[in-house]
Length: 260
Image (cartoon, rainbow, N blue to C red; front, side, top):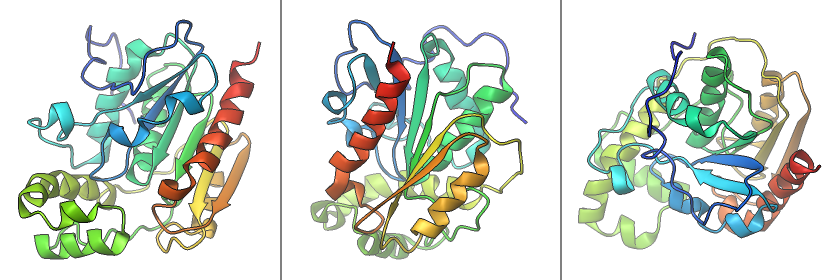
């Protein structure tokens, strides 16, 4: 059960939102985006021109990275979702949608419930990629193992630039936040709750062992509205090679939502 209620602190959203482009002159819908474990809002830097006119792309900046590097990262889902819900409150003056990739999909899901439980407007749509349906058991390798195991996991996943993997100083800066992110997912129990009243569009990599198309289809259980699954070639980081396809599908749905 969400505990967030009442007015949000003025300016609370300022630390949490990092738009990757100028805000449209007339905002018709906000798209809040959540990155993968160890990532940052920069993964959405190319999204604004790919979205319909009037859509403001607003990536969420979690503690422990970028301008919030000195803030301790969250390592539990419920307080993270509560904090994000509180921060987004002032930004819900327009319709909005949520997009989350990998860990970000789970964060977006829990934020959606926290906002609904607080009596705030629900999202118009939830987009999730590379993370299995919340009720399925998830294996999160290396989250409680040594740094060496954690680096090996990064190499196996294939989403981290080689120059980062080869630089001990960069790894030393990155690993604590990555470990906290993975811990957030690994320690998050599934709690049955009423289905969300918004469409859910899931994206899966055909060869993703952790979030296969079948496991992504399990998101259908979390909504009593429309559900759609798009399967694309590739593994866990299929978004790197198929951004136009993913952004195009998001664009089409948001264009419907912003149509007069």
